[in-house]
Image (cartoon, rainbow, N blue to C red; front, side, top):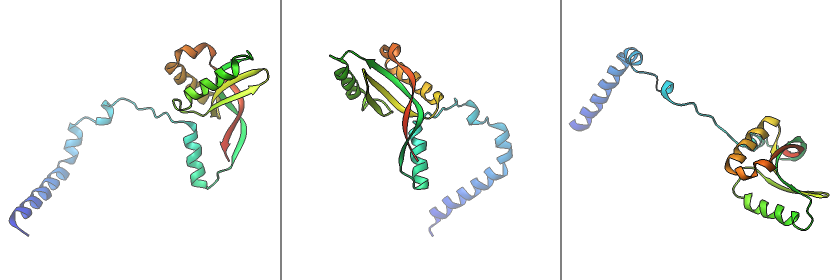
Length: 151
């Protein structure tokens, strides 16, 4: 081993010993970095937890259960409702984080978003959705529906 490498290694060993010896003093003197950082809230699609659970358990069968969706469109105008619902689906399909469902429940065409197990999950998503699309606030509701989940 050459003298330069030996010197560098010796420097780091001595530095580490010094840090370890002064560790309790250094901790007392420096502020906790986490105390000065803002809180972080992780918001994830409820489907993430479902898919992780399915991957870990090996279950991948879809079933329908009672749950909630966010309804963003409903119309019974037979001349335009179907086209408007399908246009809205096409517009949102790649821009929202939830599945977009177009349903015909005579005489209404409806567009609904998501598969939420709880009302609170749907409420949080509705809040985010109307922040992005404030013009749809008046037409956006949380509704009970059959939702698709992995069993």
